[in-house]
Length: 170
Image (cartoon, rainbow, N blue to C red):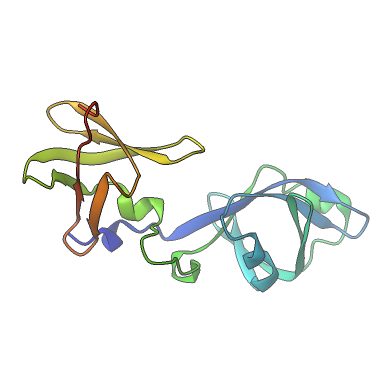
């Protein structure tokens, strides 16, 4: 099982929260680890229907992205987009460094110990702030911290992760 097969068609990178200024810019909450990507955008997709919008320009301002969409020229037009998620095609995802993975790549991986014991599959990822925690469901539910001492190998082509269970993780 290649976990790339689980890749969603679109990745959410932000959410319109309102308008900014008088020219119809949308104020966007950033939902990506790569806020610099906003300045590279030419086209995005809004809402569940993934309606295409061309980007006239985008910039970062404090913790927000400010995006001017082609044809959205008044504050009321931008406010009408509030609540819509902004997505990009998965094919436009930013490349990750070695050892980094997108959530969809990790979900569903079979988890084995370095001693050959099958533990289950990753069903959920908890984002704790300090490190991610993988929720593994098999015969029991285990919480596996995403730490180098614990996660020894991720093999996306084989759809598996090898872990070393530290004392107290069972």
